[in-house]
Image 1: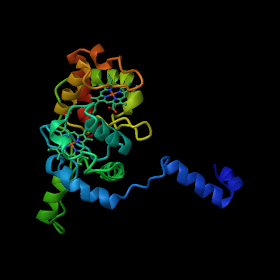
Image 2: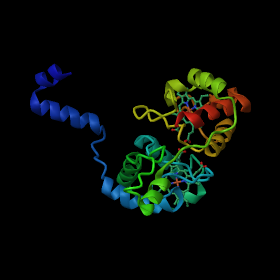
Image 3: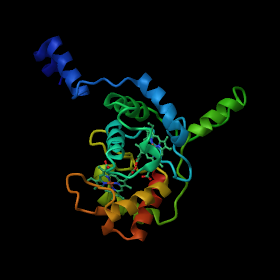
Length: 226
Ligand code: HEC
Ligand code: HEC
């Protein structure tokens, strides 16, 4: 790689890097993204952590292009979402702002554990703040070992070995997402309301598995983020 850059010379290398980073030439503005996120926070929480009952999904640290794609699907009514529609109409949110907010939310990292309490520096407010930001999905019912094997065989190649998602291919994380929310999406995929693989829209992958099989996979995913 280094010798390749040398051959290009400094200007060529910079151009190449710029092209790689932003194929469409737009550099998202994280500050604008943070401001837009105040609107989203009303439902998804200030750190885009979602709500514990899975009513509102966690968005933090999902791939930016995945988030943007969902916003476009909502806007075009290809994916139903009445509560969000008014917030993402084109007049209110031009294409550049969809990118800004998606990039900002993708950059939010949420810890999965609270650090041990240190009596000498203990600050209750800071602790409360951290607790709000910490997500660890509660252990979901099901057989973890069976779920792990099946998950890795059937889902891991796209969603990552431990369900962490894939930024490069815009595949969402599954571990770290609320189990109730995942189930709601499973129903939509099975009914064809949501498309799992845009390259092969007729193929309903999740209809090939029984509820018990998915329950085991979700049990494994619920501990994979520990
Ligand atoms: C009025 C409440 C509300 C507001 C405000 C809101 N959302 Fe949502 N959002 C929802 C609900 C409800 C869902 C889940 C829909 C479903 O079950 O498919 C959702 C789902 C999503 C998803 C899909 C996540 C996934 O992995 O499937 C994304 C992305 C998203 N919202 C982004 C945003 C952004 C960005 C904003 C701010 C511009 C925002 N939302 C504002 C209610 C809201
Ligand atoms: C070929 C790659 C691929 C495989 C294999 C795959 N997925 Fe997916 N999955 C995706 C992509 C891509 C999306 C996002 C679709 C979109 O952009 O709307 C997704 C979305 C999902 C979602 C919705 C997540 C959310 O936040 O809304 C769930 C749930 C899911 N997959 C479960 C599974 C399970 C369980 C398996 C294994 C049985 C599996 N997937 C196998 C590519 C894959």
